[in-house]
Length: 68
Image (cartoon, rainbow, N blue to C red; front, side, top):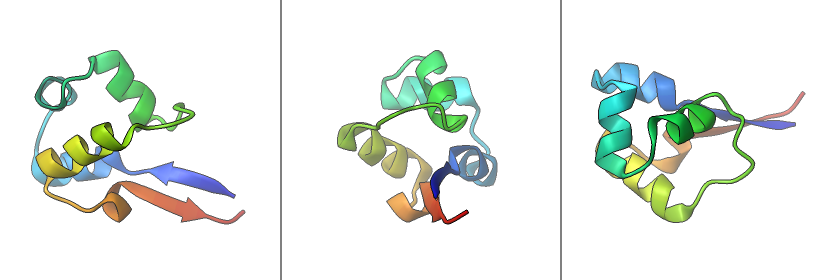
């Protein structure tokens, strides 16, 4: 079982770069990269809320649960 992070998919749909998104939500591009690549161990609700606001989506559009 794992959680798949689809931030890059939503970024492509909204045509926004990683640098622009990181700046808009107030995190570093390096931390956004960690989130995008599924390397993060956790995500703050405030960061998730900012991502959803900027990408105009729901948390389920960004995070996906998959069974192996």
